[in-house]
Structure formats: structure tokens, C-alpha cells
Image (cartoon, rainbow, N blue to C red; front, side, top):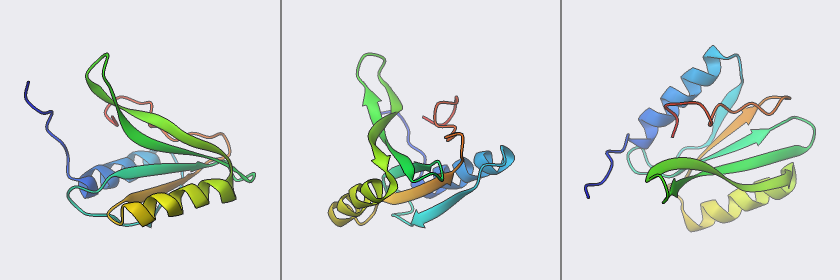
Length: 112
């Protein structure tokens, strides 16, 4: 079985930010990771002190990539989780999406 081709991390992040802009959802690069092979985490901030953190995963049943919920709760707790992950992986990208409705678009086609 051959490996699925991967987009460079920076290209994926730019495309994701563009898609969010088109939906009028503010988002920011909080941590700039490795341009080619950096992993990406997405923090969904609902601007009420709560947040969710997503990381890219793999679904063995379908053989495809997916976005998994890594943590949810108070924004400070999520920021702590991110800090721990960054300490282990300095090449990690962190994108913060700010939307009161919790929209992040990660469940849309083309973002897996």
C-alpha cells in the first residue's frame, strides 16, 4: 500500500485560513511550525471562556485522515494543553479560530 500524498503544512494552513476568511470566521496563526512537515492543531475559541482543540488523526476503518477532538473545556486549560504539545513538538502549527457559534470548518470536504 502506498502512502497518501501530503500537502506541505504551510500550504494547508494558507488554504484553511483562506476558507475561513471566505466564511467570515476570524482565525490566526498562533504558532508557526515547520513549513513542510509540521503537524497542525486547531483551537476553536467560542469567545466565552471555552475552547476545543483538534488534531489531525487517522481513521483505520476508512484509511483516511480526520480531525479528532483532543481536548475541550476552559480556554486556559486548552492553552496549557497546547503549551505541553509545543514543548514536545516545536515544529507544531497552532491555528486559533474565533467564532461564537464554534464553527471551524474542519468537518467540511477537502480539509482532511
